Amino acid sequence: MAKFVEPKRVWILIDEWTTVPPEIQPYLADMIRRSMFSVPNVTVKIAAIEHRSEFKLDRDDEGYIGFELGADISAAINLDDYLVIDNDEDRAKQFFRTFIDNHVRAVAAEVGINVSEAENVIGVAFTQENVFTEFVRATEGVPRDAMHILSIAAQKANVNSITMPSVRTAAYAFFQTEKYTAIQSNKENRSE
Image 1 (cartoon, rainbow, N blue to C red):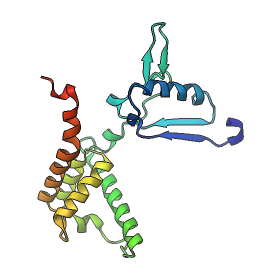
Image 2: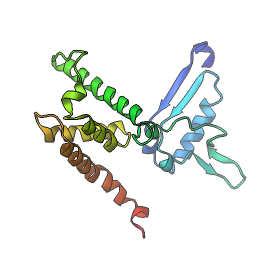
Image 3: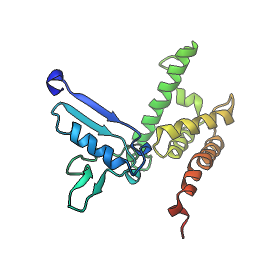
Image 4: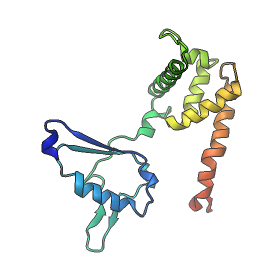
């Protein structure tokens, strides 16, 4: 296969690794390692949540099934850390500013509304800059969560700009409906 794509490169992008059951993950990792890691023109990138991923299963003969972080594959970037406001406020705010702006412009184009490049989408959507900053903080760096929080806040604001109480109420509602249930369903989180 590598000879057919030379001098190009094939990128295999695997997202949502943690949707694979943990007991199967090492076997899938092993299949990926054996079939793709040695191919010269193939790059494999896996998006996974570190504490919910099982990449390797040790065997009794000192071998392993799967792949070993560091030896077979390296951890390149923690996307959650990249977008968390406490790590780099300016970078996180700029990402979510662009994220919202792109979504608004795409939806506006679909429904036939003209949003000029000069229009400040964030300035119209949020009452103040500190409200937008609170929204970015509430997302914890997760774009999917940002969309949920933003939709709840926009519904609360109705035709008005999003206020601080709207952001806080939306973040709390999102936490209660999406995150709290997952936290409570984990037995280790409930043990004392």
